[in-house]
Length: 93
Image (tube, rainbow, N blue to C red; front, top):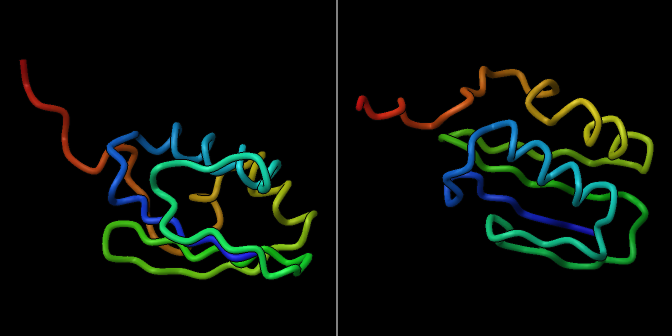
């Protein structure tokens, strides 16, 4: 399966994003969110995840064990750049 996720189109904070993507990684045939730009079944046991966030583009090729690990730990732990919790600072009241 190949999926392209564009985090920049969703205003949710990082912990929600990680939980949302984690849910998909555990149940890829039954879960789709608004940030998904491509979702195609290529009949592969490997899930190809193309992730776009804040000017970064990365591709991960994940087997079932890796999908479970990322679903549990959160994808931000496995990238080589800092991922802020929020994309914009909260507005002052």
